[in-house]
Image 1 (tube, rainbow, N blue to C red):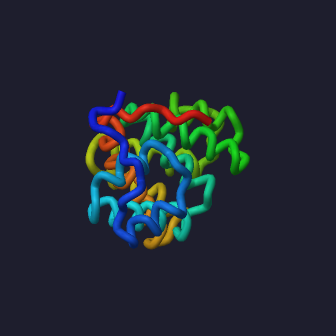
Image 2: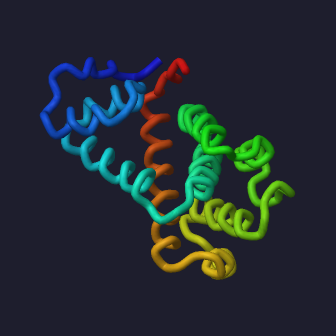
Length: 171
């Protein structure tokens, strides 16, 4: 059960109401609506990373699934497992991303490098020279930066979800 009440979404500032109108009526947004201008910045960054980024949807969802798994964020995984399926990610990759990670046979060289990079950023605070160089074999600077920002954003999101004990949404 959530630690504070979800917002009823009826008395929002116009700019915030406009941002929420672009999204489904999920608990994360109903909780974020309590955050005022901080919520607006969160929504804009999340939207930029999810919908206007340079990463492919498959790469993006692998990073989000792995980050959510390492952060033990059940709400995040619940939503992004469904998104991964919707974009056509194979079930063995979904299961491995939230389980085995980089050791899974389901991943090609690029995916293994992406997941190792993600693991190190989440668990160690930064990627090692080896993990950075391995991902840089596939990615230009823009993609390396976006990947790092995506990991950080979903670490923050995971902590938000856990701190407020977010209830899972009904699908």
